[in-house]
Image (cartoon, rainbow, N blue to C red):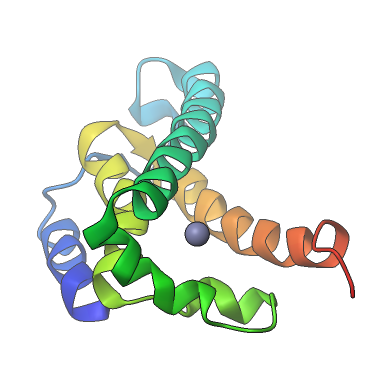
Length: 130
Ligand SMILES: [Zn+2]
């Protein structure tokens, strides 16, 4: 999965993305940074829903996704138990976002950290215990 994602990192290192360093670097300032955070989360959740739905409904994709659901214990580590193509499809939005939407570097890093924290909190508070 890392090999599939590496071109995004190489492109970002070459400056092809739209991340910016200071809030004042974007004419929208702090309001834009907040709006970007809301858009990132709202669009990301919608993207994840529809990709996950396709992974269950389209037979060829469902075969790839079966690897993930074969994990017996629903722990945060199961979030990383994917066929590489499945994981890449689910993560594509998060790689592409800073190439499409101008986003503050720190805010983007915070978004990605928040997603990891969300995975752990969802496991702690939402996952049913048997
Ligand atoms: Zn699933």
